[in-house]
Image 1 (cartoon, helix red, strand yellow):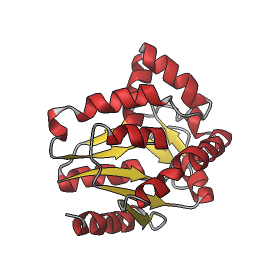
Image 2: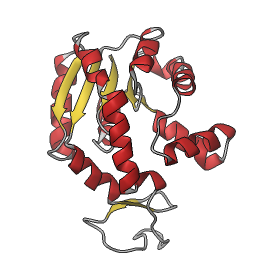
Image 3: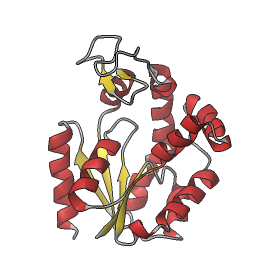
Length: 208
């Protein structure tokens, strides 16, 4: 099928689009963020280390992330393709990825920074797994289980701005990296989930 890298600022909608791509094209969705959060929830040594880094708005060191991704891509379900969401984040990671897997396309979901800040800083979470946004849900209790909602430490506006600064500095160069390899495809991510997914499908179908 295809080995796909999803690019875009934090909050651009990579995770949402990856889930839709997974469902339509039957590709495994590999999110380093999900793997890290699982370790954080379980309190593993890696989770403790990663949480401290993420709470500061910084990126997890390359060697930790590369080893995790290399192991995951070696699993049988990735033999016919995959969607990488949240990796690579740096040129060094992209170069490391080239050493053990061939990327067929990098899809960049483009959204303005201020829109991203509004999306992320307005998110509220529940321990049951439900997610809300203050723009559409103004209560402090979860509609599903009644528990009190909370804001993730890395969703606070000051941390989001730091994450975007780090993204601009370290991750945005990946756009040029994949453009120079003629693998970059950019879609407008500001028009909502369905409109963005329609553009993403055109890119994928056009490269099959």
